[in-house]
Each structure stands twice: as structure tokens, then as C-alpha cells.
Image (cartoon, rainbow over all chains, first blue to last red; front, side, top):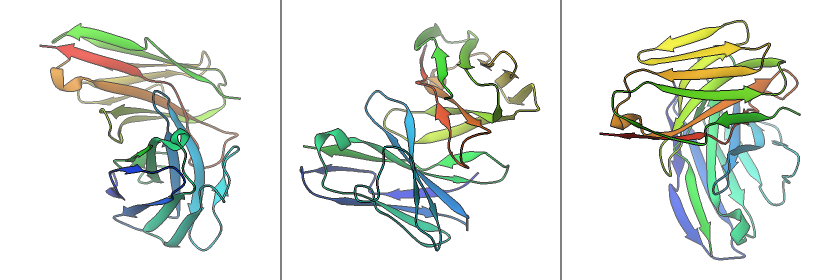
Length: 114
Length: 114
């Protein structure tokens, strides 16, 4: 398994502001993944973060709204920009470890936008 | 496009009964299938990973089967305990999807009563 730490664990934000979520992994990984879980919904992949290159975004997600940094092989950040109530979700960081294709997730960051 | 369905959406059983959770997917071209557990407001805990070439995986009281040709997986939890109360998610990685992209079902919410 993998130890994945996320900060903050939860936050309440005002409309129009931005928040950066941090993800720290206990060992080096090539790719890190950011997922979103909207209330009552299942998880959706936002983007894949590779060290040394721009993140790859899934359909429906754009860099201006969800800028991602990946400064090294154990750390990544996801920023949720210009937040609206529709951005209220749990944001989860994920990595692939041990066996090919097996994903492990952090505890998530629960954002509430008022 | 891969679609993942989990039935039932919710399940309540008395302690000691066996749990049977179902997952179906529309496209049999999968790389693997993974079962997760999610506690309220928390991240995901990986339970079992089944590669496309495998028919089942076991871990303790948990057993998951995979019938790729019919697009089905079943998670069995033997002798349920109140601590098994959680939402169980299945997720598939299709061979046509990018690395790290899982398609999740909506989950089965399980309550085990003492």
C-alpha cells in the first residue's frame, strides 16, 4: 500500500476564492492522479500529474480552473480556482503502487463553498 | 463508453450474515477491476484488485469474483460485522483508458446492525 497525506482535510471557502490542496506520498511515484467526488456522486478523474511536465486533463476539466503542480516525485498540488458552490466536493489524490493498475487514495479534502 | 453499475444501492443486514455486492460493467475490454471501501467523509481504502486474467481474489473474509465475458463482479463478505458498515465501490480500468483512469460505480451503502 501507500501512505498518502492530503492537506487540508476539510475547509469552508467563500465564493470566488481559490484553494490549494496538497498531496504528499511516502515514496517516489511517476504519476499522481486527482479525482473529484461531488455530493452523492461517484469519483471522476480530473487530471494526471507527471513530474516535469504539464498535467493531462480529462474532458470537462481545464487548467485555468484546476491548475496542478508536480515539483517532485512525492508531492503535488491541486488548486480549485474562482470557486462556486458547484465546486463543493471531496478532492482525492491517488497513486499507483505495488501491482500494475492498483490505485491507492488519500483521505481526501472536503471542500464546502458558500 | 464504459459504464459501471452497482446493485443494490443500499443494503442492511444483521451482524453475522454474509454480504453479496454486485458490480456490472458494459465493456468487457478491461485491464482490471478494483473494490474499495469508503467510510463517510473519508478517502478510499483498496480492498481487492482482480486482473482481467483472474477469476477471483480473496483476502480474509473478503472474496471477489470476476466474469469478464458477462461484465460482472461480485464481492462477498463473510460473517459481516458492524465495522463492515461503509460504502463499497467497484471501479474498472478499461484497456482504452489512460493510466490511472478508473470508471467507478455509484457504490453500495452497507449497514450491519448489531
